[in-house]
Structure formats: structure tokens, C-alpha cells
Image 1 (cartoon, rainbow, N blue to C red):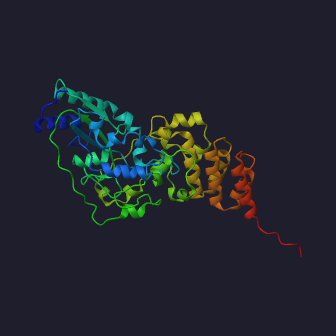
Image 2 (image 1 turned 180 degrees about the vertical axis):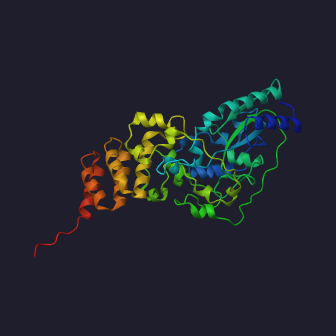
Image 3 (image 1 turned 135 degrees about the horizontal axis):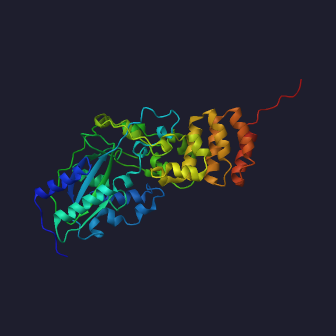
Amino acid sequence: MERAPVTSGALNESIRAVARGLGFDRIGFCAARKTPHADFLDTWLGNGWHGTMDWLARTPDWRKDILARYDWARSFIMLSIDYRSELPPSLPADSILHNVARYARAPDYHHVYKPQLQRLEDAILHLGGPGTFALWYQDTGPFLERALAMQAGLGWVGKNTMLIDPQRGSWMLLALVVTSLELAPDVPVTDHCGTCTRCLDACPTDAFPAPYQLNASRCISYLTIEHEGSIAPGLRPGMGKWLYGCDICNEVCPWNSKAPHMTADEIPDLGGLTVAQILTGKVEHLKKRIAGTPLQRTGVEKLRRNAAIVAGNLKDEKMLPSLEQALQTDDDALQEAVVWALLQYGTPSARALLARAQKYVVNEELRDKIIKELQDNTPEQKPPA
């Protein structure tokens, strides 16, 4: 294959101007070469820290060196997009948006930015001329986006493994275009975390084995979005209020004091939804309400499992009728999560509901657990005087 010629910085600026015009906040360039984090990727996968995200282990060679997949690749154009992180002032107090990570409080960004990314790809092909290759990606390709963004000067990867822009913080989305053009690389940003460990100290599930290392299988975002089936009981209390995703390590980061303050666009179907409605609503109705948002990726079944755990952590007595209704399902993972939630309450009302739960539970192991719990905690009857 004939190699595209080395370009001058003028082409970088032309691409940067097009990208800014399409709404991308920061644009950087780096060479398409083996990532400096290649060896750690093998360790990370070997430790099983990817949990049930099996796709991450399917083509590790592509993630470590994109030339293993695209031999024509010469440069990455890295893009960041600020997202609207502040809640609308009119939001109801019981809206699920209080329990949802900030990036997911809006229409799914994969759909929102697809047209702009395609137009940017088309512009690069036009600017590069005949023989140019370019492909855009946003979370869908075999790339270590944060490591590439750091190489392209968009920020540094912090101790919480998030990309931190020294001018804008870490409330951002990433996308990229891989191209055959040899573009002048930008200067990487140096690490400015210093001695700060706020993100590591704040994580309630101990998902950081060490600074700059994430055990995703313990991360609340992974547990609420990616993990299939039942969540380990030992991790559930740390999930707290989170129904979808988690912002804790970002919220405590001092660099986010520099983030732009932007209020999220209101989505009535999503903003008006409550945890109780997640537990009790009809599946078809809930699917319509979360359609077109990031929550659609998780689906109703996992959202209900998460909602039961949230209820167990909040211990709000008003949630008990919703938990009882949620028991009327053939979803073993949901029933188990509801029974766990009821056990967290420790109140007479929850105990009475637990006693009634036996008629809904088909799984013998779960029924035996309920019976044992009721027997072990039955108050002793004093003999009559």
C-alpha cells in the first residue's frame, strides 16, 4: 500500500477547525503506535479485572497496537466533548436522575454525536485527498481511548483512571478518528495529581487496588451497567443510591472545580421516572421511557435489579409495596435482590413482607434462605405466668 505523505501542521489546524465547528471541545493528535500501557493490559486481563466484559479480552493485540488491525493507520485524532452535568432545577426530588451518572442524564451520546463524527471523517478524507483512510469510533472500537487522549495532549490519566483536562476537569466524553495521514503529534500533558488521593479514598467498593489501577469488576459503574446476573452481596452496600453508573471519584476530584457548568436538557420521560416505578412498571412501558438514553443499554431487567439494591440501601419504608410487587417475577436475580433488600430493613413491616414473599419465590434455595432468616430471628415467646 502506498503510504500517505507526511503533512505539515497546516493540515492539523484545518482538521482542528472542522472539528471545533462540529462541536468538539478539545482536539489533539498523536501517532498510531503501540500503546505504552500494552504490558499492563495483559496484567489487567490476567487479573480478571474486566469482570464479565469478555469482549475486552477477545482482541487485546488490536488494543495494544492498532497496526495489528489497520496496517494503514498512522495517526489518531482525539476528541473530547463536555457533557451537561448539572440537574435541571425543576427536577422532582424522587426522579431517578439523582441516582444516575451525569453523562447518562441525556440522550445517548452515541446517537447524538454520530452525525458530527461522520462529517468529520468525511472532511478528513477530503482534506487528505486520494488514498487517504479514516474511520471514526466512539466506545465501539479496540482502543484504549484515555491513554491515546493523554498522548494527544488532552489531559492526563488520573489516579482514578479518568482523563483529566487541566482546563476543564473530567466531565467529558471521548471519541477518535484513526487515519492514514501522518499528522504532527501534540505534546502529552504531564500528571498533576500530586499527592491527592481523594478519588481512591472515596470509592465505596474499593475498586482501586493502587493509584492508576481500576478493578472494574468492583466498580459501581460496571456493576450497575455491564454485570450480568446477581451482584455479589458484599458489594451491594457500597452501591448506595446508584441506579446507573457512578460519579463519586469524579465528584471529589478538585480539578472538576474548573469544569464548565452546564445544565442537562430535560427529558420528561426519564426525569419523571422514579425508583419505585422502575420496580413496578410494565416492561413495555419502561422500555419506551428509557429508549434513546444510555439506560437502554442496561435494559429493564438489570435496572430493576439495581433498583432493588438501591431500595435496600436507602431503607425507605415507602418503597416496601414496590418491592413486594417486584417479587412477582420469574427473574431469579431480581427476586434475590429484593429479598436481600428486605433483609436490610430490619423492620416489622419488612419482616412481614418477607414472610409473604415465600408465595412468590420459586427458587428453592432462595425460599430456604427466607425460611431460615425468619426462624433465626423469631422473637422468643415467654411462657404465660
